[in-house]
Image (cartoon, rainbow, N blue to C red; front, side, top):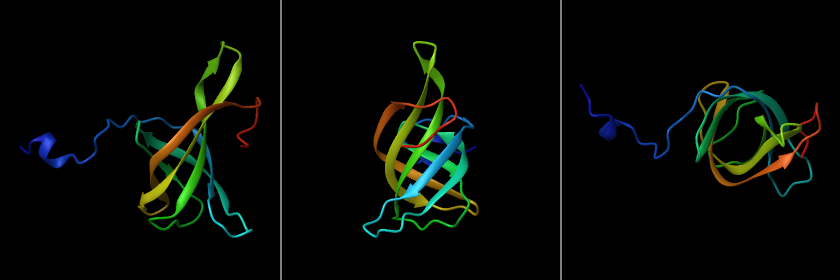
Length: 112
């Protein structure tokens, strides 16, 4: 039986959290590519989510994830994270989080 410490390369535990996610490709070009998906799992250092289009490793993204907790039990929150795509299984993308913050969100909105 393989030793988990030898086979597992991730430094953070992954949690199977399924939430709505909006993503946008960060680019110096004027045209901004965006998409919708759902998280598959999350950790403190990364997010795996479904995508509407193929994303390339190395691309910089911003993702906005609807957060299950509310501020003061009444104000919806979203997690906004920036990072780079590290792998792209078919129909999915995994990003390494480089920067993140929690923001308040409208009741039906994930807009930045």
